[in-house]
Amino acid sequence: MASAWPRCSSRARGATVLAVSSGPKRAGVREAGAHEVIDRAESIPAQLQALAPDGVDVVLDVVAGDLVAEAIPLVREGGRWVVAGALGGHEVALDVRRLYLHNIQLIGSSMHTPEHFDLLMDLARRGTIRPVIAAAFPLERAADAQEELGQRSHVGKIVLHP
Image 1 (tube, helix red, strand yellow):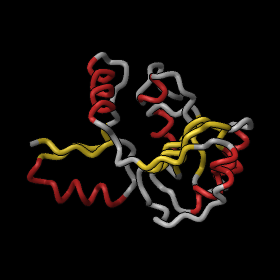
Image 2 (tube, helix red, strand yellow):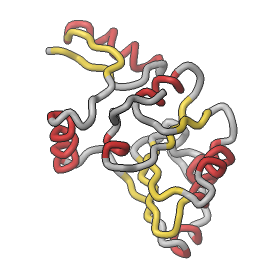
Image 3 (cartoon, rainbow, N blue to C red):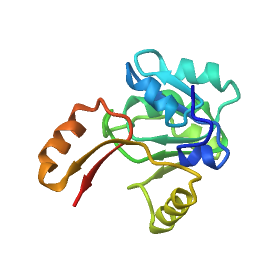
């Protein structure tokens, strides 16, 4: 069951959060604030359509690849698809008519702007959100932290303490 208070900034700002994950990470993603967690091992577009039959307003995507072309038809008129990674592949083929006929914005992002970071820090300071920390390492164990990150079995951030 999700926390009684939001742990993710999207939920804290009133969004219904649908996340994609797999295996044992799904419970952690729900605890981090997702309302529903879509199983990556099954058809993501089919599950998304079942959970949001009228479509979605915003997609925050760190995977890209084939998912963009498969799921962009599920973005509502005037919606946005933000790509901030390419774990699923860096080349995407899609029908651009979906973008211009439905006024969908496809946005590239290297993550946070200074303004967005300030907003997140303010939310954290006020206790509106609490970042999810998967593991913390002293700086001298940075190689261990990198190994943990590479296993991709964590939910949340890997932190280095100087």
